[in-house]
Image (cartoon, rainbow, N blue to C red; front, top):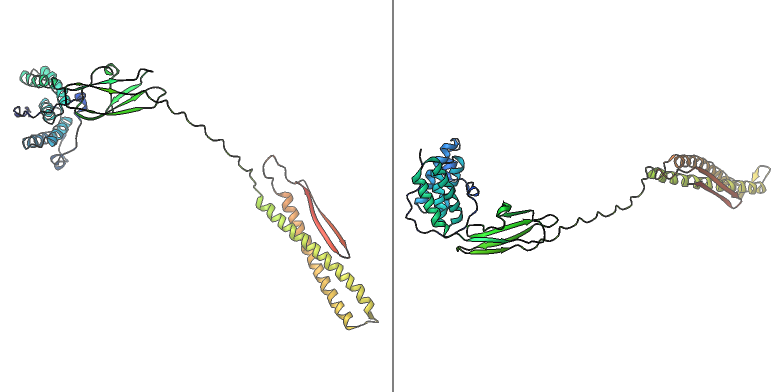
Length: 340
């Protein structure tokens, strides 16, 4: 189905504006109710539905919605008539630079198709818009080579860095990058006036050097048998204490036995002698148990300590371990020694 431009050429409310290349305008706003109503239709059918919706919105004065319908229709089914209607819609809403670029594309397209009426229509509108196009001129830093220049996120070819750039009226931004420098962003506003506006981009800051990583803190050497050694020390302590207690009780039993001999004659003992005998038996029993526990605990603790691994591969395990003891009539003392 052939699409002709809207017969709305009498519209005179056209705001001055600026635009980038037409290719950046063909993929535009979102979807309409008509598109959502036919999710199973082909792209061609959806494009036609959107085109008709754009006509209705334009007739009712809903120009923003109409521009979105035409742009989406053009994306789904590129047709010259749709492009002409989109350009006319953008001209109506004041996006004059975008419309100017679209009219130029439409004029070339119509010339290739041999459609002189459409070619003349697009050319006339482009000529009218040319007198209204504001322009910006970028003032770029000259202290070093520039890597790239983007306007509104779109790369600007280096051949156009120092030429006038036409943009629609409104808010815009230019982003500059250079080797060894931080990216710089400058925001500016284009006014609806056919005058040249200078946009100065200051020199870029040096790229931040990566801070050196802090040196790792010394990690304590691994100690795989720490618990084992703690248990061995505790066991040795119990063993040494038991040996000392057993020896002490043994010495006390021996002392009581000598005193019993002086108080018991011919198998007859005084009451005090009988009590000493009972005390001596109790001391002897305690000495036997304590000495047995001490010997076992000391042996186990010594074995655990001797077989435990060192804190790190560079520190050898204890090589010599031994027991020391001392006893007299006043008591006894035991100790554990070793080289670590």
